[in-house]
Image (tube, rainbow, N blue to C red; front, side, top):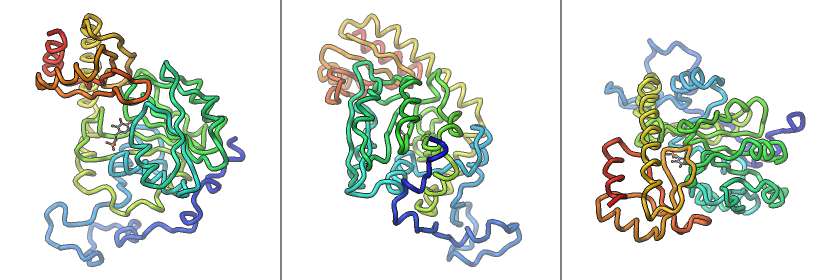
Length: 348
Ligand SMILES: *Cc1c(COP(=O)(O)O)cnc(C)c1O
């Protein structure tokens, strides 16, 4: 498929003919800007750290990420959270009221929301009872207007990863784009699909600084793909979609990998502690395998147990209305102290 995959066959007609918006600063990227006077963007000239527009290409952040993840900077697109990245993918490739995408519930709700916002049909193919993609059913659902299949692995809210076999099968047999949302990859023993980017030109990977990296508040989502896919997305992204404060905080954090690693280690060890306790909680009927920073459990009565925990000042996520998730609750792993309180509450 590598030989006959051409991203241009998937790009919307109006996007194909577009050139990226050229901001005032874009035009000067080849100059040594240190001694220049910038009177081109109607900014306030008095320096306060953020009086200038941010780098529209976030070159410094991308340079660090490229090095850490072993890709080229032109294989990276950054957005205002993964949510913006996912929205850009819809807008670049899905013609409203014509094209469709496939999602695999129970999964992250934003794919469906973004499909709705963009007037793109969302074809839902339920996961199996083991929360794995039903690959044959998925491929039967594909038609000539199916542009994207969204795979969330590890999946939210089920916490498991999808089998390599099914992911590879879809990558090899679907002629459109496969987006693998790896928001939780840092909590998994599995390798990222990033290592396969060169193998599959139809692969797009999204990651985020919101979970393992501890920066949900700054909104930084990351997209890794072929340079060809990234250049399409660059055409349509708002020029200043990642603000200066976000870029500064992201750089600071990315340059402190030891701290990130130790927090992930702590979260994973807390997860294992919580799993041990859950086995002995009477109303817990099933604990699903987890490769994320949360645990999905099936209980006797999700609404009742949810309310009981609220009464004890602990807020968890009730997933009982999701398909295949009747009477399930999703517990995020907190600090050691928070988990101790949760465990006490569960045992009470
Ligand atoms: C939390 C989460 C994200 C993160 O989204 P941001 O917009 O980057 O905060 C993405 N995908 C999934 C599946 C998530 O659960």
